[in-house]
Length: 205
Image (cartoon, rainbow, N blue to C red; front, side):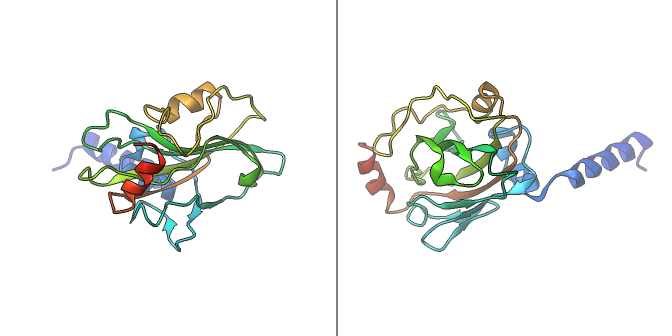
């Protein structure tokens, strides 16, 4: 027979889980929380690619499908609010041995409202490029509301080199600039396909 303490624990567990947003539940299920962030966002980001696929709730996509910069949509608090968008892979070079966690793929800051094209690109977009035989990688999009327009000290990175992408920390970056908890997010998973060698050539490997 279950004792009172156990019943209380179970009740509290389900109450806490029920309070999570849908995207937070998916992030906990595939361990984006705690591998990338400690606390999940309330809202979904809509992330759609010109190949016709959508990055949503950990769906598996291919590097070929996500090689071009996606369209990312959200409802801004106002046109005077600034946002930061991060795309990061915590599974580099593999989920089993993430020695380069995180390898960030895209970083745009000072985005006015939802005008992504008017933001400051700190790291140009690079699609997924999981090494061969390393299994599925998680590719996580996170949107943060900035307290104001900020001055960022990070080096600007192009999409023709891999230098400076490894060992990024979303948690540390958010803490450094006072970004708090992400307001929206989404993610997909991908593994190696025949496009990856082409991407590696682009990056100078």
